Length: 269
Ligand code: DGL
Image (cartoon, rainbow, N blue to C red; front, top):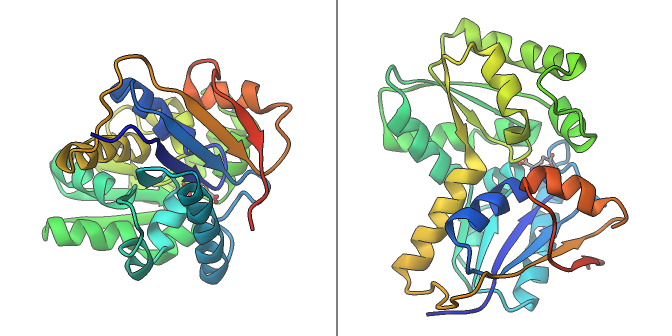
């Protein structure tokens, strides 16, 4: 049993889609969230910069005395080397392996698409993870650099013409490859779930990587005997590196519920 909080971080607010799932499946756990909103997006930056930022995010959470870390960011998950993540003093889960496992289990014909940021696609992390699970699969990737900006700007309605056009453009090459499963390899993309579904005519299984990662967090806590024994609902503390005035409004869209915990503006060193 361990009543310390689960630490969750993302480059911005996308990781809140994983927090939304954690609230559902682990309602009594405390959560400390860090969104590096002052430096989002990470996905168009160099590997060295992404690793440096991720280490600062992790250091911040470790100082908060968390019991495990969820990297709820596709870019960090696919870029941070195992030599770093495996040496952390607490268990570390990211979004790559849980989503890869789910996609391999769900895909009937083994034709799997991956969408995410430039850095995520360049790393080929999802492809490598899936080939390690299933040898008969074909992986087709396409980076979608505009989507994080559209989501962070609230352009998420399924009838938004600009977002629909952008998603259509990014999915075209994957549709041509006749994919049957698509990994949303960026935690911002579940906000565009309906847009993706409409363009894919509801014929492709969408894998929400944040949701899969939240389940992996529960499994890790269970396996290590680290679940909380709290009987009342847990609390969530939100930390961001940019202004907090509009945080509640935007964050509640990602969370699907109002923000109830403390919101702090912090500096990362
Ligand atoms: N949520 C991040 C990810 O999953 C956003 C992308 C970014 O920071 O570029 O990759």
